[in-house]
Length: 294
Length: 325
Image (cartoon, rainbow over all chains, first blue to last red; front, top):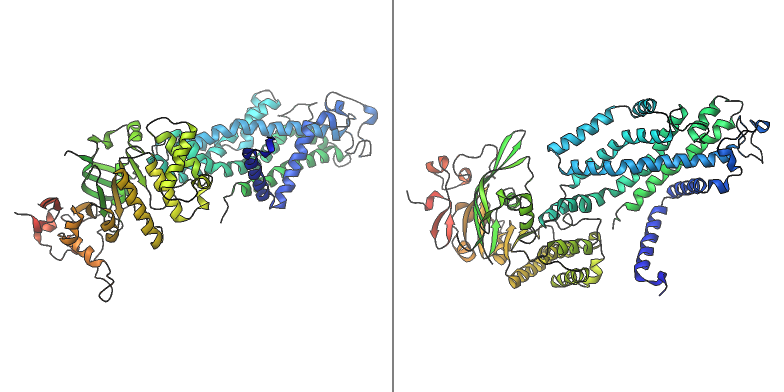
């Protein structure tokens, strides 16, 4: 039997179609999805779609320096004569990697700590976890990241570490709030009464009810993390030249504003499109996970 | 006591709040024998559910605190058990059906997911996936749900209130518990469904000879569901007797008042109530907690707390009127 005729696949396909129906009810989230898919595609296939892939690295061609946008160089060239469009495509890679790596590092510990603290609300476990969280939240995030980055040698990796360090408390807070109210729901009590183990209650009863909020926050945070990463690069604490990071490119270009505006403006627009895409998708995720009201 | 499945002795519970300490349970005494259907009646806020939460160790603490008493299940004190021992009592030993079936089901999982995980982790022997599924279908069939296979794939939100409560009953009974606590299982359902659910529940526990504690504030329901009735008032049991005995010969003034408060189809007007309301748990009356509302109160009731006293064959009452000096 062909795989698409199997009942299991049929059911999954049906779930997918239902999900798409709910997601696409809001056209704005479809626009967001389009941006994100486009940016991800360009990032993944940058070496193949960029007109001058060799311009991403060490490359100098002063004869074509600071050209305004033209058919040959749609986004113009920078002071070293590198094609900005190609560099933007490669820049997406660093931005997306920043977002993905930070979220992968941040979400699991934040969620688990929040769940545990929320479930044992009012006990010393809650006290310890949430007070540590509060301490991290009390430090201005960008300042903390700046401090960490300037102590360590500036690099993309260290920027990721610094942002992760200040980001997990938001997830702990979010999930803590959800978990501490969910733990009093009757279905949690019912599970306890049925003899369910603690891990079962935490991860199978409470966590699935938090998923929609977590995903929505993740998609919004993807944008935020990219912004912060770009900000770190902008002040010279993130990716180092000649890495084609969008933040670094904006920083370099800013020196030549307003005469050679394309050097800064196009990477800045690229950041904007990426961040906007993830922010718009957030609403879609919320609709997707919302329980149907019948 | 022999043959007692559950024996609650002198259970006292306090809640600490801003205004002070609420002395909610004031020495609850009750015994459930094996295979017995026990009815627990009392007005709202008298501590019925609190007592059951103590039995299952799900009393939120803080603010709740058990200050005295024992809860013996098979002769072992539930209150002294470790978490893992309690876990073993829950599910296989004691199961519970909640008042609101909508809130008792996790909204993000299908009925099948939830029911099958109860069967998988709750049953005495380890089962394969196929057996778990067939048991789930069987138990849904048993609670007379049409098309169990389809219901397994449904989410709680796709079922009606009555169907959800049937699912909850199926879950509670799927692990073959020795004692089933039904905490007002029909309160949130409409009247015709109530009757169906009660009949079903009755038939199921009779077939399995499961012991039941049936919590309700309706004397009519108790009359249908229980062999033995405990009447609770303001945190203590004030009268207990076999069903026939209690309904033909209620002794405690509160029980008598409850009986008179049942509206009758024959006879005119609204039924007579009991004047006054449940006492303030912050400063409860020092003696009998019913004394301020009691038409028969005398000096002794103000200062002394009456204890349960056997006055006839299995008929106990906590009232000084039936106690010799």
